[in-house]
Image (cartoon, rainbow, N blue to C red):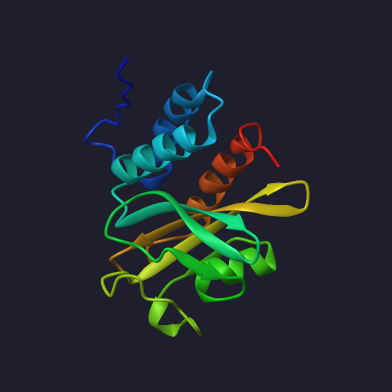
Length: 163
């Protein structure tokens, strides 16, 4: 069965877009326990619904992050702990918002078109197991609204993640 979601084209407020998207996303994930399928659908819904430049997951594999499902241009396949925004989020165990990626020490430029970024760690207990990375091709794109709603998605995902 094909799944879909809808955000009215006249909704331009970021908070309203998230409020329309999240219940539909959670309904899409309901009843499916396969992590890869849920990551793929979550990324597609976020990417399309919020018009992000790049949206994707990295999963923790030993001392590296390994690329998972994503939407957007070709991406970095592996990232070391502490490297770039994703590696820093993993190491610090916290969400990181970067207004201008060129000002972030050690930023990894998978695409030179990326201008700002938000990275959200997903936890099982105290361990980071996934990273959600969202990039924009505009400066200063992400704020506390994005953090709030993307962290809600991270919390929802805990039931799909096997540790």
